[in-house]
Image 1: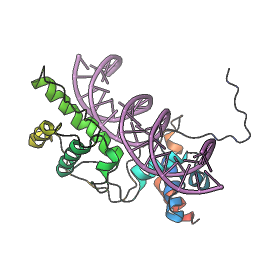
Image 2 (image 1 turned 120 degrees about the vertical axis):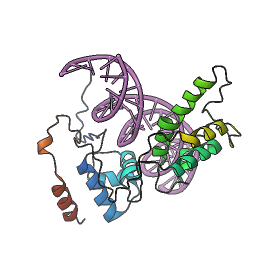
Image 3 (image 1 turned 45 degrees about the vertical axis):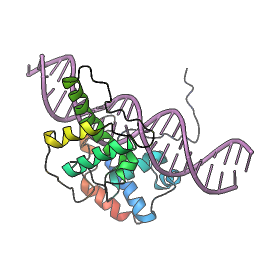
Image 4 (image 1 turned 90 degrees about the vertical axis):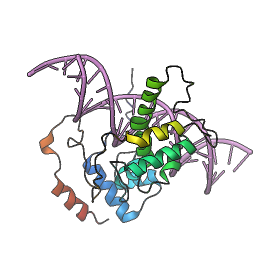
Length: 202
DNA sequence: AATATCCCCAACCGCACTGCA
DNA sequence: ATGCAGTGCGGTTGGGGATAT
């Protein structure tokens, strides 16, 4: 059925979660060479990843000025206001929130805000005309989100944990960095990775 | 205690756009 | 002019932890 490509140039592109080692390789390469031209960068760095994957990983996670975790109430309010104005223009919204990425804002909106909006709708408005969270994505979104704004700013900041900014951007690895056969013990430890980063001058 | 369900979010996909040869 | 490679964006998903039964 599947003729295996038997291509001498096997590309074997990796997918799925990034490992610590891959992260360090990418960080180190960009530290030495800068970003850009992601496809060739991926090749030059020796990563079995697509350029897109490298770019995404860098922009959303590894970049030094990226902020992750606990959205502050101010940020939440800003997100709601901007979303009311722009709709699902996540990257546009993200430009107003330093350190936040479009992906994180998008996730935040869908998991925390949209859920509450829908919930509130069904609770109060069994027959409401469904303005819902669907914004008309044409230009200004008129007045669709006023209800949600007032709704949220009151007390819906339910389980808000105080902001904990991780000083370095190296943390939060999934612990099992997803080798298919999970052999936790023969994986890299931090010291190996740090020395590896330092050794890799170029 | 075991299992089903929910929920989150990192990373994927397809498509649109841009610039270049 | 047109095809192509690179990039950016938004929607979507799947794996796994958290929570419920």
